[in-house]
Image 1: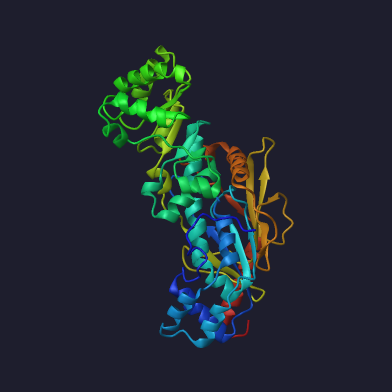
Image 2: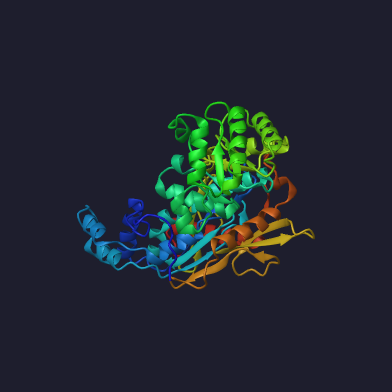
Length: 460
């Protein structure tokens, strides 16, 4: 049984693509270019400030390939478009993905030029799924990579996704919640993500709740009686320190009712100074176990400064900077043809040349289980090391059950722990060098000879 992907009803609709994919599909079908092709998805270079990336989105990619279809409405619309032949429309109506997929497991740390997914299928099939695959894998990889940096900055303090309202649409908000969980976040404020993905859901209150009441103490008391479990009060609507004192008075008065103040939230101002003052007020009032949650425009640099400075903050809510990955919102990723009809293919464009052939990443570790080296080689190579790309689908069907989200989260934590010391920090460092096996140089020469022969009109 397929698990819920948590995304929109159009998620499997093959019309969710670039129109040029349809134009190429028609030309491939009509011209008989239907031999087996392999495409690989990789990132050309890491964004500035990123020392590594975290792969995410594979589950949604597989679900898309399993269910990819054109519905009647879409086919009728295509039938009205100029240039699409009856032959192409018939092939689109019958489309089912029947190919193979190899990919790195979700949560895997990876670097530039390393393929995180390979599709091997008939050329029209492998081409047509490109746009949606990039769309799904790119978003979650961007957010998971951002979230991983926040996890490293927080140093084991819980992090909560607060970012739905400024995410770029409903699907982005849902998948950002999932991607942040992959990277190690403890929960989300997005209720639907909690239902779809089983992520712990966290919620406190907004300033409007306080403002709607006659006074702050009344607001606190009403909220506590309505939400007595995991009670967290927002302190900075008016005067943060005065609100903290009110919270102490309220907490003491509710002991006999069995209501416990679990936490308070700070959402503005000098979070370092305010958290120290609030911590003092809470401790003086006997609320030593009451947590302080901080939110409000935080990113990994701000979190690191607060943690390194010793601010008594127990957890962080992260919003806009997470779901938009505001400092690095896009990756220079590509899905490129590497093999067709049994022959290596590659792009030779200046600055965008690709390595041909189906490839494998071989990862080696040192005695401390830190990543020592990655070697990019041909898929059939017998290089030493852990093979990162593993079989996921064969003949259009998944060949194993993909791991549950919490298992992916645990694995991603192990991956982050395996980063070499320079890559483990937030500050940019020299790029991690991925070794290129000589077999790829030889394959590139073979591909170049093939290109040259075709360009001169000779048979391959």
